[in-house]
Image (cartoon, rainbow, N blue to C red; front, side, top):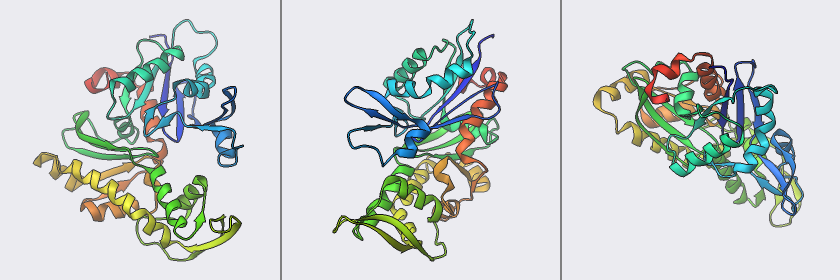
Length: 334
């Protein structure tokens, strides 16, 4: 009861940490750049992302989480252990309890990998792993403890998770290893068809700033830099905004079809709830302009995006940290 509680949201693009003692979560890009010759870290976190794509070719880019799964345990520890020490405090009589977000589909080997990370960070045996999609629903203050069904889609950089919740637990759910990073790849490949090569950061920025899931105003975007594949020269180029939407359609349809397949598994009573109440999209990729309208048209149900979808998971963790009874009352969170 005297242990500090630390929340940890391990995402493909970002890692977020919170405790009851801090007002705002700590947010770091989940990326490191290392020197393979001596395994030394040259850059990490937000600093690494700033130079990502411009790093010396002899250096190696490490992303500890791939498709929602922890794959680089040691590097993940290197990235966050300083923040954990700050949140836990210097004078510790008790090991901190961690509340950690995990994928809906978690293999035993993946669970063991996270347990090993927590042990290396000095976590207590009372630490808990909770599906990210439940944490996001809690963070969005959705009524998951009621008998009516609540549909939520968590759209991250590496995964898309779909679940219908009722009475505090997952009634049906699924996840696909497909997300915002894959949409960025579609943009990259689309420009390659025009013999223009752009980097991942440029693709991500274009997606965020100019793209949309439904037809947007088809104005021309000027002064974007890329490399002419035929000549190797750096060039400024322009394109119409709808070009981005067209590039994304196959990926968005893949996500929509995965959602549809989950909803088709619902018993009639819960299906009726979703038809009446709709579903909620969250996660960073849900910020894509007009995505809710695209999904609503595809699924024939109302689709809503609430405020601050990037932070829904860590807000759910924060709520649990500050309300201990949530863990005690919900059997699905233990």
